[in-house]
Image (cartoon, rainbow, N blue to C red):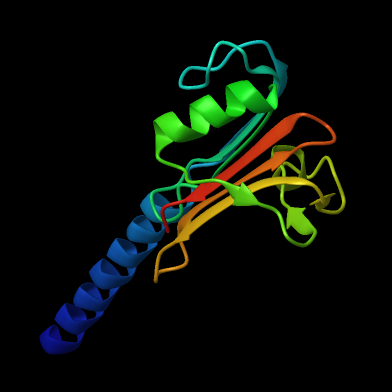
Length: 143
């Protein structure tokens, strides 16, 4: 009887550990802010900023959308090490409002600039500048 009790206790401890590990990794919540005038890390020329962040250790997903002139955006992109190329075909962009559930479908950008650096684990960064709307979209995920 003692052996069975010890085995059950060990199983309970392992299950409790797994539940706690899951909570730490995947339950950080999220935040969304729209129409911000400024946001730390963005150039001072950025305006009308939408910001979404999924606060968990596992994915670290962030989406930023902001208005900025192409000239100012190019300077910012260069300072970040993003080597922007011309968009050659329409790009679907998941915006901050899309991730926050405020927008039903992705935004399509037909003319502008594009940069992508993806990791083998599915994380990375995608940057799109929408020339028609003078709006930048930055999506990153550390996954």
